[in-house]
Structures are given as structure tokens and as C-alpha cells.
Image (cartoon, rainbow, N blue to C red; front, side, top):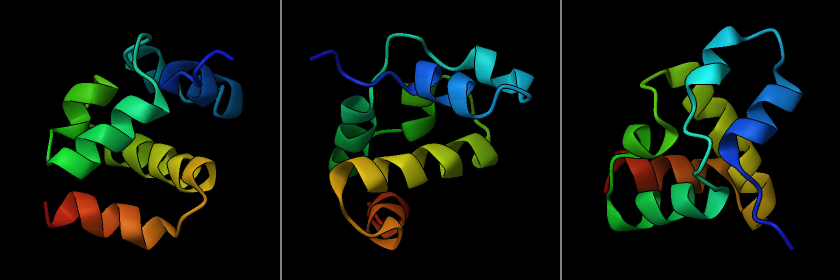
Length: 79
């Protein structure tokens, strides 16, 4: 099974946000989760420093990982 790519998900779900084109096409939700867990720079993973894109990706990541959004957010904020 192919890992869900950040850019593919974002462009399919937010087609009117042209900033989505700047998302790193190689990165997956697992990469984003790993960055949160290890204190890495999530914006480096995403490929663009945009808080709306980050929030939308975090919401999908919470769904994928079956965990509360706030846990991901706090993990990122306080790491």
C-alpha cells in the first residue's frame, strides 16, 4: 500500500489553494508524524511555512493516526 503523500492529499482536498503546489511531493504523513515526535521542523517536512496548510495537514494526520488533533498540536508546539 502506497503511503499517503502530503501534497497529493492537499491538492485533492483543497484544489483552490494554489499554495499547495509548494508542498514537498515526496513527503508522507508518516514523515510529518515523525517530525512532530522527534521535535523536527514540520515546515521543512511540508516544504512551505504556511500555518493554514500545516493546520489542515495536522487535522488529516490526526484522522490517519486516530488520535486527537490537540495531541499532535501540543506535541509539535512543546517539542
